Image (cartoon, rainbow, N blue to C red; front, top):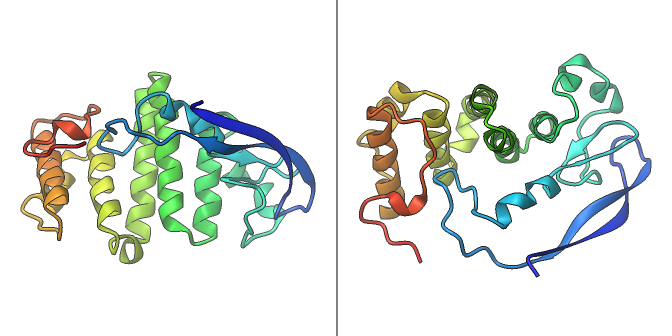
Length: 213
């Protein structure tokens, strides 16, 4: 058993309509070495399709459609919301919008990153980079809150680098000291990759001097 799912009726927090939704009920622990942006290896990386749900009645996209929303369904009818479509990546981009509306900024940033992962798998490099740039826009817009979490600050370095922001990674992370030796080592590795103009995916166990178990 890697993962178990079941279909259950959930009531949408926006429109109030109930619909069948697939939810994960059980999964094996992930023991793989993640990418630097924390994407797991298989089989866990394939579970991404279960990380976003959509209400078929109003189009509300979130990790679960019963999560309360700080807006009405009129927002879900707007062009700014619907411009992303209903592909898996599009649903994650919509999830990012609603999370930002709900002031859950870390989840908004991660939803853009998940959309990038979907495009990565489709070899859509520019679309993936655009999703990462959208994640950084969220980081910049809410930096006072997000910068309090060093894991998010470090994650943002990889997002910047993967979307071509080499100079910014070097400027903001070179010589930066965190409260963790592991985070310091990963940040230094991100800078070294940026200095080479490397925007490719790297595994966490490639970081010099770091042993992951």
